Length: 258
Image: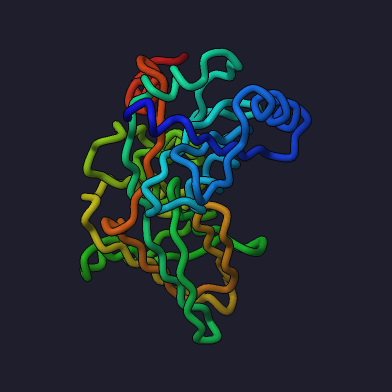
């Protein structure tokens, strides 16, 4: 990234007090270019804002650099008001491919969305969901009784997936993680790793009695009958991280916390 590319900075911020104060300070120090004309987007908030910003600027080739002014900041860099152009100059890019998700609802309607972190299926009522899992057209699990199922990217493997005891994936690994949420049967099934090129299909069994919703990051669809998920290689984001604090390094470090 050349110096000319970091002259036009656009700031976006969450509604939190810390984020809004940072927006005011950084705008005063460095100006605030309209996002459509910017060379870099600086997101001020937590991981939620970072995901929203990444979705908004997907396929624009405008990199996004986050600074943590929220509660959770795994995707964010440390907040510092000084020498921001120099930090942007030195930042290391990471290309992220989202998951493409298509859900067919029980009424026959079709809905599509993309997920940078994960696609998660969740039971809607007090009854456990019953799911059938197919990979590349072959049924791999006829019936999974559970509260839900997470399909996580490497970038999302340290988010909801980790909370559900799923594996942490290196950011460049060609894998997706399938992690059950509170599995009842098969009791000992703890999930699977599949190639990132896999075509994943989840059929909801007895959807009339055991309704299930699906969420692709922040987009939720209710009463689904089936869900198809695959990595979208035609879509991408560029996220910027300070040297020594890349997403690869954070994922590696996360695995040695205790």
